[in-house]
Image (tube, rainbow, N blue to C red; front, side, top):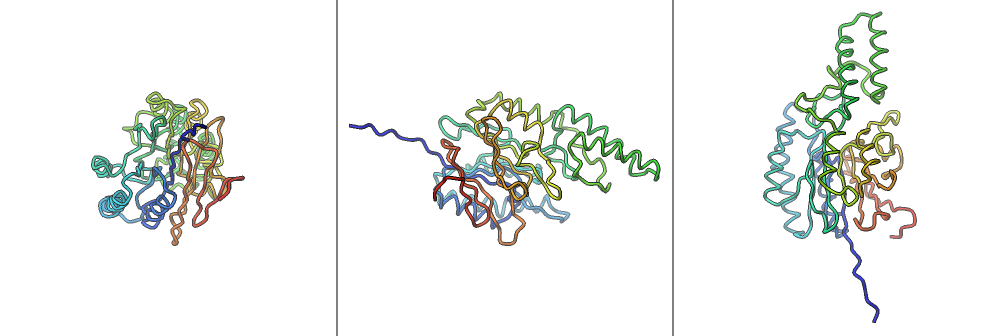
Length: 332
C-alpha cells in the first residue's frame, strides 16, 4: 500500500496601512473567510488619519467602538482564525493600552517587539518603528543607524538656522542642508521649511532601528521566522514614493535582511510603491520581502493584500482592489 504523506499547509492573508477604513477591515475579514485562511496579519497603520485636532481621541474611539467590536464579531464567527496586528507610524502610542487590553481578552496578538509561534515550526514577530520623517508625530520614529543619528543632528542644526537666515546666507546653508539630506537619503522630502527639526525624534528613544533588529533577531531563529516590519527595505521595489519614485525605506532593515536572511519579511509604509514599481515582492538573497501597497483613501475601499502558504512561499497571490493578481504560472 502506498503511504500518503500529510503535506503541511498554513494560509495567511497580509495587509497593511488600512488607516482605520471600516470598508477595508470588512473586506479583509470577508476575504479571509472566502480564502479559508488560518491567520490574518496587519502590519501597522491600523487607525484613522485625520487633520482634526482630536486625532488621539478619534483613534481611541475607533479602537473602542469600531476595531474591537469588528474583531470580536469575526472571532465569534471564525473561532479557529488568529489575528496578528501592530501599530505603525501614524498610530498614537498613547492608545496602546487599549490594544493591550484587547490582547489580554484574546481578541488578537500584538506583534511589535514580540515573538509568537505562528505554527509548530514557524515564528512571527513585529517591529513598528520607521526612520525619521518630516512629520510632527514622532511616536514610532527612530534613527535608522548610529551614522544617520549623527547626520540627522547636523541636519537639524542647519535647518534651524535656515528659518531665520538672509538671502546670501540662505543659499550657502541650503546647499549644505540638501547635501546632508542627500547623504541621509531624504532628497525627496519637504523642500519648503515648514516643519521645525524635520528629522528630530523623541529624545527618549536611545536605540536605533539597526540595534533593535539585531536584538530582536537574537530572540528567534530568523530562518524560521516571519518578520513584520512596517518600514520597507531601502532602495528596493517596495519603498518607492511619488512624485519621483524616490526610495524612503530603511537601510537598517535592508542590512538586517541581507545579514539574517529571514524566512519572509512583510512591510508597508510606502503606500504607492506597488503602483510605481509594479511589484509587491522582492527577493533579497534567499529572503522574500513583501509590500502589498495601500489604497485606503479611495472611496470604494480597495483592499491590497497578499495571500500565501507559509510552507510554499513560491506561490503568492496579490489582491489589488477587487482583482486578484496571480503569480506567473499559477492557475486559478
